[in-house]
Length: 214
Image (cartoon, rainbow, N blue to C red; front, side):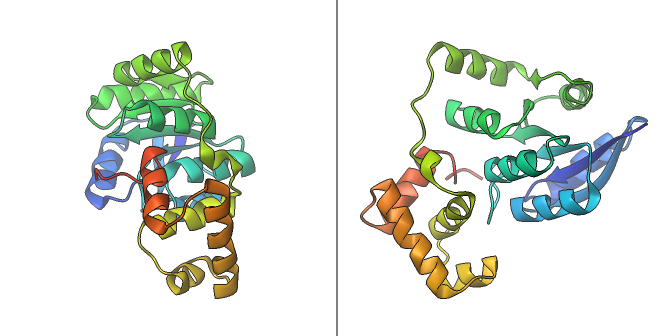
C-alpha cells in the first residue's frame, strides 16, 4: 500500500519538484498540495493523508502551528519538516509541535525519500545538519518560548499581525468579527509584554514564527 502524502509549501515550483520526485517511487502517492498552513489543515481533514511534508515559514499559518493543530486533531497523520532552516529555534519548534522528521531543502532527494519511509514505518528521521542541531538542543536546552502561553487562535492572529495585515483583513481571513480580533490583539500585547507592533514582530522573528529569509 502506498504512503499517501500531502505537500505543504508556499512555493509552487518547490511543490512541483517534490511531487515529480516522489511520484517516481512505487510506494509513495502525492494526494494533495497546500500553499500555506491553514490550507494544509483543511486538506488533512478532507484527504486524511498518511503523512505531510511540511515547510515551516509559510504565510497566514506557519508550518509549526499547522503541525501542532494537525497532530492534535489527527494523531495518526505523521509530519516530516522540509525546510531551508536548520537553526535551533526552527528545529526545536517543529519537534515540540509533533514532527517526526526534519530534512533540509539542500539535502539530496534520497534523503527525503529515506526520511518519508523511515517515519512511515514508525521511526524518526533527521538529516545530518538537523540531527546535529537536535543533539545541541538536547545538550543545551533552549528556555521555554514566550509563545507557549498563547492559544492556537492567538498564535494565528499573532502571525497575521506580524505579516502586516490590519484588523479588518485578519477578521476576514479568520471569519470572525473585528471586535474579536481587537480583543485578541490586546491579549497578545498583554501576554507577550510588548508595547507596540514592532516589538511583536521582533518576538515573532526571535521565536521562528516568521523569517526574514524566504
